[in-house]
Image (cartoon, rainbow, N blue to C red):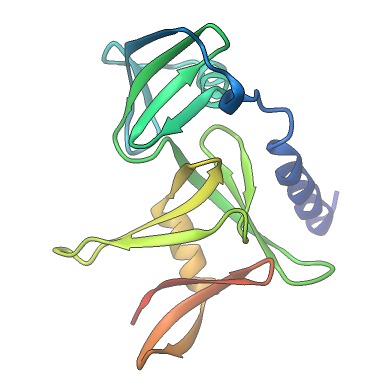
Length: 186
């Protein structure tokens, strides 16, 4: 398979990833509880203080994740379990720029093997620490769940970005699916 065919297959996979997920937003279970589960900023899932080593289990849990306000839950039709999330539940561990008909698209791969195409439905945003000036970039994954963009992936975006003048400042801008996203000011 050629590189172009691989990228188009990745784009198709990203468009299918949201389909087939459980309808967690429709479930309203009677049983609510807290569980000793935490997702660290680096995307590692912990149960009772120990990392969950089985990637398939983490992937399964990620499909039943729900966020309400600042709280995160694992939800099934019969129970809703609050978990702790240090920052956001996912990490974007890779990105590919896919061309073809129309504008280029940025396809992100997450730590749970999900795929997201940045654009109107999946915007990018960058928070900047006021003290250190360090950026924390994110991509919207689904519903109100986001992925922290890994540092090496962010550097790839910066490499692809173009400089524009906005409000009297030079900014780095990257595009996906015809939507422009500001990565930061120079």
